[in-house]
Image 1 (tube, helix red, strand yellow):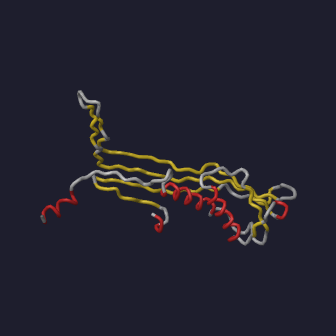
Image 2: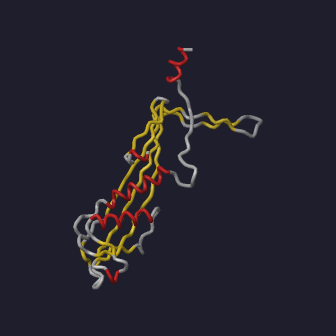
Amino acid sequence: MLCLGLIAPALPGCGTFRETFPPRSGVEQLLISSAMDRAVEQLPTGWAEGRAVFVDYANLDAYDSPYLKQRIREVVLADGGSLAPGPEQAQVVLEVASGGVSVDKGSWLLGLPQIPLPIPFADETLVLPEAPLFKLSSYAGKAKLLFTALDPATRARFRELPTCYGRSHHRYWWLLFVGPFTTSDLPKEVR
């Protein structure tokens, strides 16, 4: 029995895991929100200080836009600005648009992929599991956000703000039939 206990961890096995039961996984949502956080953090400081800012989201079309809207409000307040209820009461109008907010998936396998074998005289197929020497499944969250700061009276540019980019990643990998191992830059508290 002791020998079996020592040998069992070295034996290869196979299995699957399900990341989600709702339509979108927690990892997907965290990849997107982390990429948004990193994009918004690229806004320069000092532009909102002491000013009433109206944030215009009319051109914003993105997954998880309520989170992004709240994150932008937080950045305005942290920069010393206040939130104006409308453009008429604002000293600065901040227009926000997204150039892309999504998750890309990629995978790479060194070894044998799954092999379907039809069973003769039966309407079924036997699928041999993959045998990875090395396998990588990679998920990358990406966000591109455009911010335009305008003077509400003249509609002229108040200050030039950069196009902001954010990335996040979460990877699963297997080596010599062992794994999955995980590498990620998502916050450790939520992984």
